[in-house]
Length: 206
Image (cartoon, rainbow, N blue to C red; front, side, top):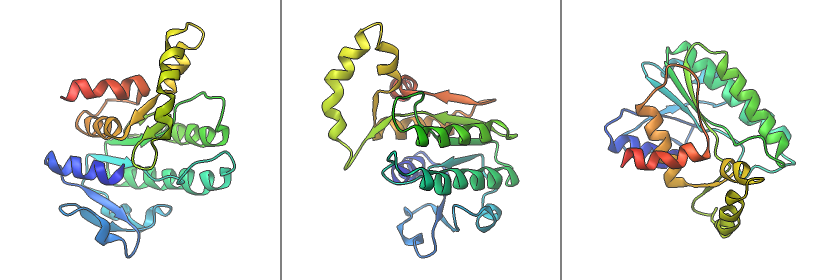
């Protein structure tokens, strides 16, 4: 998602800085500026944040699973704290965070950590855009597409319609489009984009 967003923003004429681990700067897309640092330690990259209008946070535990609560707290939560601190010290006016749809009957530890991250952002001086996808379809993550007919049926039923829409599937293209739109349309205060909101932005940006 990050590399696709960087390419989209560069193509639209934005100046982009990308946080990269030591030795990984060569993986950053040409045209973007690599900032070497540790996503869990604001002191390693905060001086390189400004000047900037928007900070996009995409750090998280790979392949989230119910038994990974320790990783969620050590990586997802701590990286958000570091990013929020760096954005605040750098004078950033808009912070974009990819959270997760909630409530949901599964992945409770993951959802709880993401909720805590959202609360941290609400206490900041900058405005935030919080995206709440449930599952993003992309390379290597296509098997849930088989559930689309089930989602379509549940969305039509009064008892399950709201949940089916809120916990629906989004594509990588839809996520990148929504992120790029959020960068170019900063809010005045906290803004939430749920699954229907993420999907709907494709039409508004075509």
